[in-house]
Image (cartoon, rainbow, N blue to C red; front, side, top):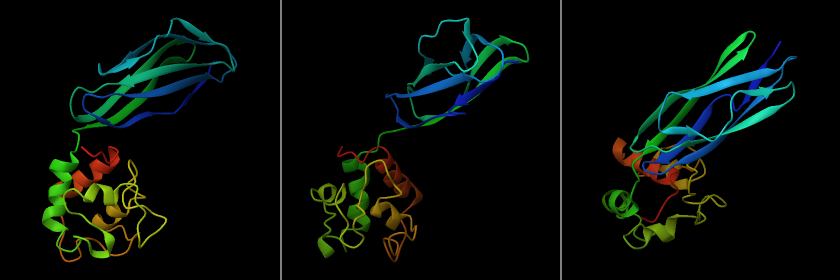
Length: 205
């Protein structure tokens, strides 16, 4: 009988900025003892498109094919969709694949992040310990700069919250000592902006 396996089992486009796009590749393998025939595919969300694939497509045992997927969200929101291969082989009529992702509004360093530093951080970090979070200095003191207290970790590693000292301090992960600010807490919206700014690549925008 025919059989199949997918790589990956589900497709996560990750975080995408509204108006931009992300690409992923899905592979389907024929792993049964008979040919796997794919008749068509359908995607439940029109912001996700598949590269050119000719149907019907027959995969002999041991063969595979790739489908290149692009998600181009026009606005912010959560992607929760399904790609379905329709198969005309015995015992297999449909092969569903979950599609996920998150489209975010771009976070501006100058408009969204620096004001947080101005209100909550510069009273202590206007130069204390070599860390200047004042306007015009903060970005250059943070992004890809090795932390003086937690080397070789960097203060902000673009796209990587887990290895950014700033994130660990703000979210009190315990990975990099005490939380910051030490005697108060940022709002949920402020924390979300910092998290998304790092995830989006810590842009100087």
